[in-house]
Image 1 (cartoon, rainbow, N blue to C red):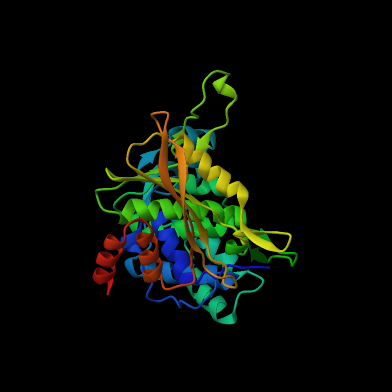
Image 2 (image 1 turned 135 degrees about the horizontal axis):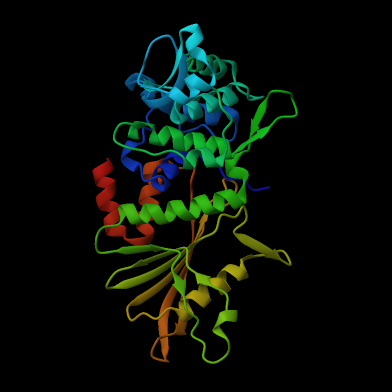
Length: 364
């Protein structure tokens, strides 16, 4: 079976665009040869980023508390004091705020640290590192978390340094599962999950172009095309969503990503491009109304045991003035196992070679 080889450094590089944190990412401490496939990789992502939080100090916020005390603190809770008759023991209930680290931000960090520590295949070295991290959270309650826990997070200038680490925590949480071994956890191999990675690859490519292309380009995500049909009930027509639409005054590009382990199909021992992808791209090209140069691109990640492909075909498509228009269709693979600078260059070259060369000089 063909597989993708995506180094951990490149995984984080992709996510940095998705999370809109390109300038915040630190890739220097990651080994570019590590494959993103085990609990240890999740642990490495977590450990590298949580170090920054510990250096700056755990985020604290005011937590409202109600407790029975011997002296007044904050505001007296007369109702609880009278109902529970604590005055006979010289105590009163009080409502007060305390500035502490026992909040949802740190509770999530503690939860993830413990689950990584309990992973069935974690290395001894990372287990030791995680144990040292957990020690810093001894004043933080352990709580069970789920996807909704991350929706409760409200970021501000006081806690924005938590953003990236908590995004990594969300990634880890979404890919965890209970091990058959009691008290242990396992983690899905993220890059072997085609459905998950198809969405990630699609969004990464869109965000990359939105961030890296210059002002002469406009980039849209999942724009909906209208069918060039007349008559009939339009409500019955399926939506026609393009992954990424890139356009300038000179050119319109429809870019569709496909995260497949096979980008060719086999028919009677003959390798061919996947026909469904071609039909889909032709539908886009025949239903978009533009007056400038038109190009359709099908972009695939390159499995490490297959050869790259970069094929270009000229086609005639329907134009918006009921005539025909010249269009170009390209089938391109991108090697996600390369150095992330090379990946950036390759992606930019697909759209604008001149801009790619300029960015390459800036990075060198």
